[in-house]
Image (cartoon, rainbow, N blue to C red; front, side):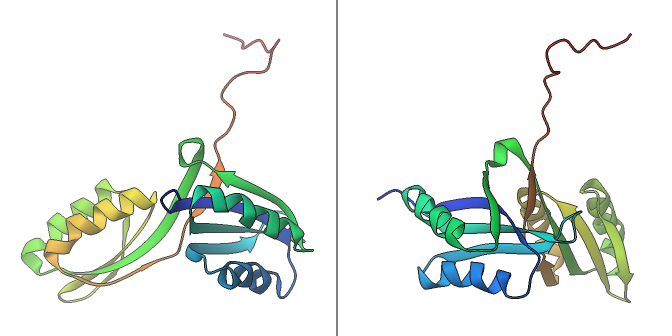
Length: 173
């Protein structure tokens, strides 16, 4: 059996009560670990998008997708390859920030595109929306200062946009 790896599924569902519970119960009943789960309405208020990152062996992923398709409120399922999608998570991190180290922590936050959300006497709370790997990198760099608490939202993802112009398109210039 192949190694278990993370798979990101984008599941478009009807925006109705109980749909999220049915989707997450499907994974629980089969003993699959949900690594990350995020859900919110789409631009159409009748639909929601569930982004679920699941730990399953590749050969079991097909079974998971087939079972998801059987759920009545599921409209569309796409597996998102990290190389062909944009993935982001939001992290809130409270870090020990003595006055002597504060400037370095602020610079690190800026390098990662984050912001200072709250300031205490010896602590800073920062927010950063980045790829999961970049958030891991930031956490590693902040660890020596002392991370007091950290909360991550879970991954959200969409496919990358097409970059090849359609045939016959003329670009002015």
